[in-house]
Length: 142
Image (cartoon, rainbow, N blue to C red; front, side, top):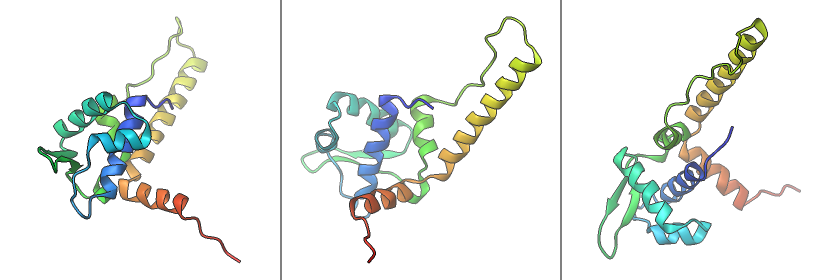
């Protein structure tokens, strides 16, 4: 599975916004861009797409920025990837003549893609926040 820079940056931005969801404090693009080394102009375009899709809201002004429009437990990775990448296309054979071998391979590839989509649908921003927190604060058992 190839992840575009645009999709990766969108997921990073959404997780940053998810971390601030409880306080509903808007997050500035500049802070996300600097923290993760993402070009700010690119991030602006990404957040505008997410806003148009209803996943984020923006506030203008000195205390402005972006925030999640929904609870992080209700936003999945598939929600984000589908906005940026669209619906995955069905894989078709490039072979000139369809054979049982090429048909079998294409069926497997399409099944694999469907499994990826299903998995992305089950992973929420809230779950990813928990995983990131565990990475930051590992537990040591004695």
